Length: 72
Image (tube, rainbow, N blue to C red; front, side):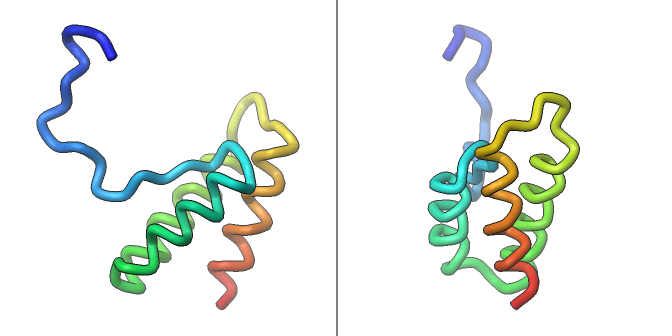
């Protein structure tokens, strides 16, 4: 982190979409949130992976995990 990169409020939920492992960890962290917050975060991560300019196979695997979570 740089000198000027000191956010006032840390992220509420540490979420990731780069690999399937990050997606599973994100979903595990989401369990303590409300269902509305869970769906909003999972949907955001799904679409970030889906429309990423340089999509990787790990992102495609993460999309499957998020899609499965959202379908429940």
